[in-house]
Amino acid sequence: MLISPEFKQVVELYRQLNRPELVGDRFSGELLCLNENKGALENLWSSKKFDLEISLDDETFDTESEESFPQDIANKNINVSVSLPQNENGKFYKNIRHWIASSDSLSRGSLTPNTYLIDDNLLVDDSEQSADLSCVIAACNLINKLGEIAHYHDEKMTSGGPFRLVFVVPGKADKSFYPVVLETLLSAEILGYQPNVGIIENIMQEQSDNRIHALERIATFRMALAEIIKNAPSDKEAFVYLVQHWDEVLDSFQKSWESYINGFSFQKLKAEIAEKQAGFSQKMTDVVASLSAKLFSLPITIASVALVEKQGSELGNWFYVAGSLLTTYLVFSSIKIQEKNLENIDKSCILAFSEYQDKESLEFSGIQAELKIVVNSLKEMVSNLNGVLRLYRWLSWIPVVTSITFILYKSHIHWACLIDYILYRFLY
Image 1 (tube, rainbow, N blue to C red):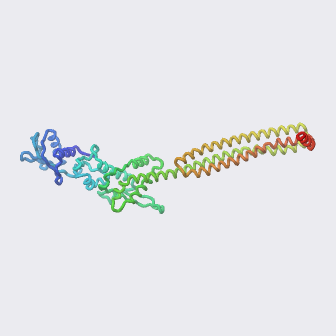
Image 2: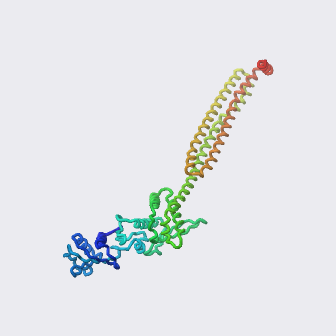
Image 3: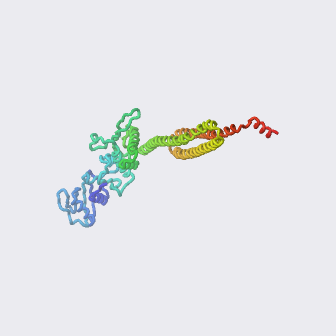
């Protein structure tokens, strides 16, 4: 707030005169002119910003006649009269309500320079503030910040008057947009309210820094503003209503923003979960697919029986048995390794999705159903693959069983006698 040294001297002079009644734009009174008073008066006289009149011993001096400042006034009682220009050089207002009602600049978010409030004996600057003055300053700050986030100012309708700030927001019924107009007209009803504009400052800073979601954040705030502005009753100024319900704006914005972020995070988590699901599914499928080549050796081993039978070589028979044992061992070992790999993949899957379950419990309740479907699907896949691996494990024994059966067959053992002997040994 700009305050000139000359205006401070005028206010100090007014106080020394015991704050006399202001008649029009003029005040006057009697003063003992000490040396320090004389210097201030002489400075005001030479500045020519105020009309001064000094009377002493029936002699009058004034600035309008462009007379020189009277020097022989030190330590004498003088009558001083000051006429205020009521412009940027200085204005006196009866009280803060008179100031709000009379100053057009306040409705444009600008504090009038060189302002003095008589009833409050308050010079409007940063060092002297009352609770009511703080409310006016907060309202002006709000006007300035709203001007920064408004889509545009309707200047044609506000020549010298309050701003008409226009916010373009989407409609609910369709995809069209419509303007919400806020006229920043102040009244004494703003006293008692100090809206905090910190949230707007943060939003504008995020936008200047090109932060992610900055545009969405400012759009959400505009919609929260528009809702409160539209709710203003017809008998109350919309801006005054906005100031009085500023906390509702902040609360509505916070809820809307959390809803947007949760929705965005939900979609992001769904994409991440789907990506992880595809990755784990591929790994699990590879576990079984890698065994396919090895399983082709099983029918080849079984078919070798026909070749061995034709040769009729005793040595060839035992080579066949050794080959069958080796085939079973290799296939069985591979299956055991893949079972272990599948177990490790399953554990990694549980660990990976537990992170999203923790997030869900804290923030994103909507992700629970998605997680349940994905986790149950992967569990079912693990169960099916374990069943396939168990079948492969049993099939891996076919070469050994086939070779043993072939050797027993070639040994010409009388099976009926052998069985009868075994039963006899166990039963008797």
